[in-house]
Length: 183
Image 1 (cartoon, rainbow, N blue to C red):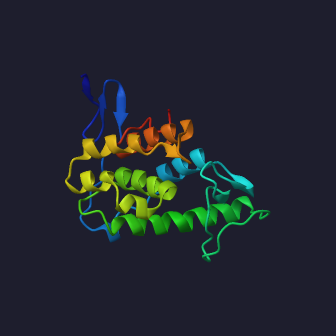
Image 2: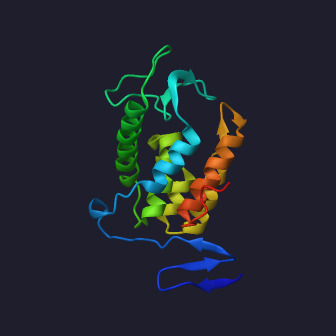
């Protein structure tokens, strides 16, 4: 393994620049910078202005919205603007963040939190809460936690290439890799 120290905050391991972890003891004061999260979610969800059934058979619209911020489920025939979809996505991301933080018992870097929010955005907070991923995370074993992302690649009973790529991106972001979208 080749480790290169760039400066006091950045290192390269085998030629890959790692994003420095930002740890804070109080989650309420944590930097809520969503740049990486927004990039990840919009890349994998894509934008759809008309409701469609996702591979799991759920009506979806915008950037992966299945239930609007008002609590109503997405129905066939509905349409949405890009701005409305962005607002719905941000509302849901905030809800997912609150949901996962109820279950996480260890400090998280901003990158780790964003990866977990993306994961919960896709699989739901309930699935996250009962997962071995969360159990390993709460033991403090971040590498074992990262490996757990690889198990969540099935939709509608089938292994989906898009989920394989998404989980790899989430895992890379969780580990602080700058190349998290290059999968």
